[in-house]
Length: 320
Image 1 (cartoon, helix red, strand yellow):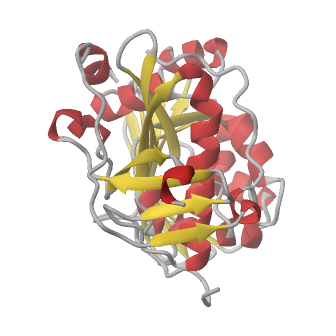
Image 2 (tube, one colour):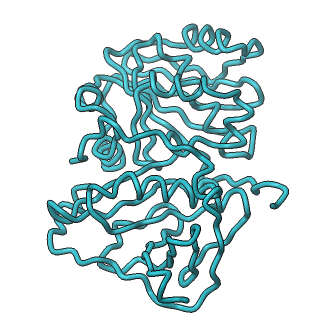
Image 3 (tube, rainbow, N blue to C red):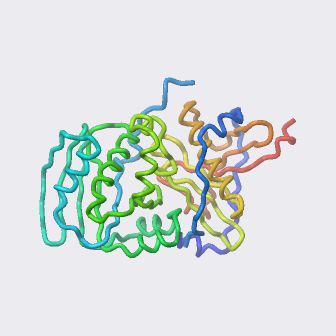
């Protein structure tokens, strides 16, 4: 986020007008996933189904922000997983030191490493996630004031990235009684209170959530401020599911529109196996025509872990 703030003279990245195919999206496809409203957001400092993706070079990992250092946490983790219905739980490689505790946990076919540390989480990726966190000022202040943290990394088991992320969330909720209160996802540039994570995961069964991943939780929506009026809206971590990330240049009143559009494109690509690339266009109903371009070199900060496409809105009347 700091890089964007330093780019006060940044110019709008223009989509490259290359030839491509227009993909027709119906209004129903555009709105099939009802997004939640972006309230209390601080302006931040017909295929058989989608293929499975590891999402990147490594399986996902999360950080849990906590208050005072808890110490050995195996019993809390076991009880928390049992409370979620997992009874066959195994632990290995447990190491307990004064300032850290480490173990590997196996449950429901998942193998996850958990490391507890008596220090705050730091680094550029952590700060990016905290800066971009879409939450209240009170929650963000608590996140910044955390005293210790857990690092949870998926090691082996299920090749479906949604199942991996679900398992990491189940571990996070199991550790809530240690004082952990927020789930930070460095790859998605996001940080959410565990209360919100629990509420989202209780809306549907685990199987339904894995089949239809909640991109508002496992993906990111970032606002890079160019100046007081102009913003780059950008999605993060869509590449986990083989979907490109998207960037759109606009203004703050368009934030909800950008958020809804990114989610609609994510759903369309996932459900129809579409392969969007630079130069392609996509039409939503009769009034919204988009063209996808590449990131200009001066806007390289928009690039995520996979491909990022810049969205340009076109006038449909000019094509009739």
